[in-house]
Image: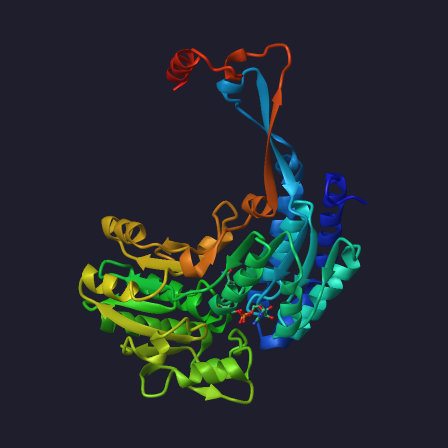
Length: 443
Ligand code: NAD
């Protein structure tokens, strides 16, 4: 077995993985439910089906992606044939978070294996049932020397980070991202950081309000708001605020009923710590809807907060839960003064039928990725890069870009021997004028 160079072996490993995840699909869905009541529909759309699609796409394209790529040679090197060789980095460490605990562990794994690396996966300790099934799938599919799953919490992650790796791929919070980046710097290890941020969602007066409300409610309350690319806070034109709030309330009821606590489609907060962090955000705020909590199973209703102060807890940091602050704006200056308070977000959404306004927003602000007139869905196009910028992350992946992430692109010039133009060799005496002429001709 040589996974570094043998593409047939890598492909067979991915086919084996495909069979294994198909075999265990029901167990994965059950594990996600047991961990935080993730509805089966959401488990399929955002976790299992996503991984099946990524596996099929990678298996179909691996031969093409992995083969040396011929590029146009430089005339300066004439005669030559120039290639980019696709070389695996070597030993790769993947650290995954808990919010999409299956998909965010498996997606980078597929690419790291396709690219020919030896991989260690550390799933999140906060979703123990999913972590267990991820470990089972890995041990049933791969030789331990090829891919290994190491379960555990912070201590295990730190022990792993203390080792030397050739590439680190981390998905999680900004705070831990900084710890990972420091550990990687010790050995100058290249890395990807898929982090979070405070994602603005702008709704101007020209937007289709009913549809905007439907799409925002879906993107925000999916996974109970525990989605890195969920809208974090709304910026609504003050001209339509009252109407829009009514539309949001209607859509929340349409999706989750009068009492979302009994809805089979609304998950729970992952643990006591996050539940307490989130419920504390509601103290002293004016709630437009929601606010109901249950400490027994870490329930927190879909909640709209009216005009919180920018210095409030809810506006301090990424919310990462089912709380949606509604702020208003009158003009573009108001938008800038609020959005620019925060680090560059992972996502930005703008709802507007004014094409010039939407384009200006997209161009004026720096963010990882986003949508005009929708939320979250940009994630699903494998031809789009997925990743942050600034504090929301370093690097991007999905589709072929995932393969490229785990691949060193090695430049090789294969020189022919039938001709050897002598100008480059010393002594340089009087050659400089000829050199200048050649360079002028070439450019
Ligand atoms: P987290 O940073 O707390 O944990 C992520 C992983 O890091 C876990 O496996 C955990 O065991 C490990 N870890 C935790 N503390 C550590 C430490 N001190 N040293 C080393 N490793 C440590 O994040 P989380 O709570 O699991 O996930 C939520 C965060 O992840 C949110 O900020 C969210 O925006 C972000 N996120 C980003 C993406 C993305 O694709 N950009 C996707 C999902 C989640």
